[in-house]
Image (cartoon, rainbow, N blue to C red; front, side):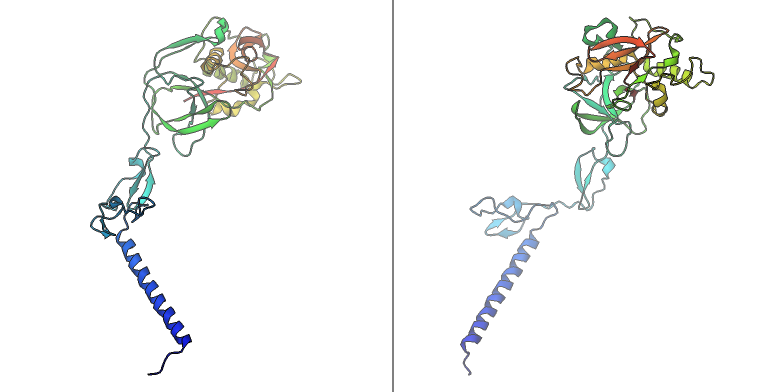
Length: 347
């Protein structure tokens, strides 16, 4: 027999090593395959640095390193659940795939106790991704609530208690730079009933821009509100009334935008009114200020508010009420002067 030279011996040795490696890989692969389970993340593993195998991580009936597995595989391929069958935001495995639930759970009819530390935002759309439309400042569920913003007599309000309310659910969370982090509330799809929440927009109409209430209406206003009267829930009615005057071809209160420096606010909020937004009444402004403890010292730095805002409440034939945030109360001004504009809505 011909003797192998040193080079041939080296090649033969390498071949033997490669065969051994291949056999080891095949054996290891077989072990891993036998221990695969439907739940992602489970495989034959060790409990600690001492390499002690964990029986609960090894498929039941399989023995590795002297440890017999206890894990029973969960087969999800006969599952029938759909996203709408699972609670919103919760996850489950169905037919081997992870799905996220979309079923909304209605919130109770108990008062949410809105405050600076308990903030809720409104998403007026019941479906789709979260789209915050404003911050909730009043809840008509629960008992009737009365109060005064910063103790001012003109800043009194009464939030009524309503029955037969729509149903709502918690859609998620949102963080606003001024009001902070809070839960987002949306109406249940297809719900009916009375609207439960009052919502203040998070932005002014054209920020840093002031408007007359209605310049040419000075001396002609005809729907006054006594200073002591609570007019919560009147913002919608007030807005509709003045807007009808504005759009009356006969212009009963005079020409539009007659001021040389500032437009009337009704000119710039026509689209918003059509979408269900309104100029808050004086009592609605008061409830908003009181809900979040807004004062002359925090209105700007904390809440990003301007100095003063028009209400939709008339004071007399010459003027309308407005919220004065650098003082923290309700006052009034002639309708040919100027203030900022921020709108509210209900849902």
